[in-house]
Amino acid sequence: MKTRIHAIAGGIGFLMILLFWTSTAISELFAGHETIAAVKALILKGMFILIPAMVIAGGSGTVMGKNRTDAKALAKKKRMPLIAMNGLLILLPSAWFLAGKAAAGEFDTVFYTVQVIELIAGVANLTMMGLNIRDGLTMTGRIGGSGARSTDTPQPMIEERPAGPLVAKSNPRLTNYAGQELETRSVVALCRCGQSKKKPYCDGSHSEIGFSTEPSRDRTPDGVKVFDGKQIDIHYNRLVCSHAGECGARLKAAFDTKRDPWIVPDNATPDQIKEVVGACPSGALSWSEPGGQAQHIIGEKPGITIENDGPYRVTRIPLASGVQAEGASPDKYVLCRCGASKNKPFCDGSHSDIGWTDKST
Image (cartoon, rainbow, N blue to C red; front, side):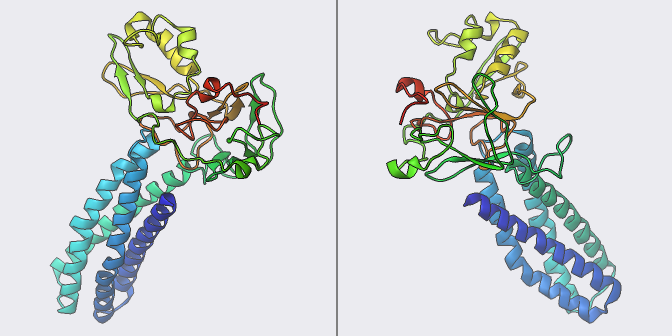
């Protein structure tokens, strides 16, 4: 619902500014002073639609993106205050001033100077809002990203159905733990209640057992802890950790859960640390230079890998709702398949705690 409200409000704001800009340009070029005055009066009234739309779009965007640190989310966060300041400090005062001047018939140098400033500010906001709309559509998987991705072929994405399965779209690559490719279609429903008799596919068992997709009240708190080192820092968010144990198995000197602190960056070389970060399936681990911006290491091949008696490991397939966790990567995460995770939609290792297997029903 928040995503839809954000999209509608942002779309209204964009269209209103576009309407203001084009009507101003056309009236200035081809109409007389009377028409220009009428356009200015209508633009001022239109602010009663534009301003609430911008407030709703900005507010909902801030709420949805507060825990996201991926590049597109950060870019949107930087643009939003600029769009707001441009609107409140330039567009709104200019609309009020120009409407007053036009009503008084004062089409002088001051009028046209402010008019030019308003048009430039309008172009700036249209550009930034257009970029935000593009990035939002990319983040939700509705359009592909730039670069190697083809804009002609729909890109795979994963949707979460409330109290239901995960729905993977556009023929995602689906493999089991042995690397064997499984049957997939343009739209495939994957079980996440843990009770389907046709795993990994959904058979409707979630309805029979009253499955809830809501995270538990005692879910793991969201937050990134930074373990400082002399040559490299390690960033860790336990909320998205699937407890696969890759870190401890590969480099126990630096990652030992029986020690406090359990992560000691200086007990290994930076290259060894980066190798472990790359092997972390959930994106819970990332690295940075001392005091720098965290970076993830992600495989190149998009796909969903099904762990044996475990969760779905996802690489480079966007989650429609976004990976809502601080410092998380939208391109690497692990989704619960047993239905017992407290951190849904993410896996928290509960499948091991309860002894869940692919044969569980």
